[in-house]
Length: 150
Image (tube, rainbow, N blue to C red; front, side, top):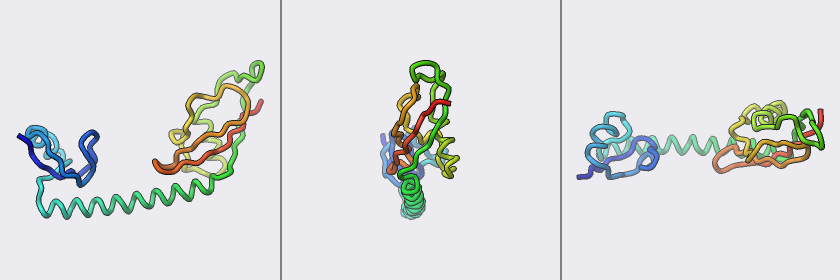
């Protein structure tokens, strides 16, 4: 048997806040309802969920706006990272996302964190690199990173 519920929170592999879902009775009774993650389908629950969704949308728009402004400010930015060189322009270590984020923060962008730096693998040689900074799921900006000898 299945129970229809309104989700009060985003649940991976099930749905987003406000979605109407059908789940097994036991899952609803033993997990979703006691945890407050879902509510029985009622008019009051629909109104409450609609209010929550409106607030979440407002916050999402504010975050998107802030990320867009930050992306515009980061446009055409570049950072220089000094590293020790071993031989033939290879570095002793490597330049990682944390070092790039710290260099960007020193430029005056404290919002940029290491997790935002989209680095496929650490930089292991001198040169110039275009690195994407993901500021929001919908907004990213490219920053030029110069890795030079110390």
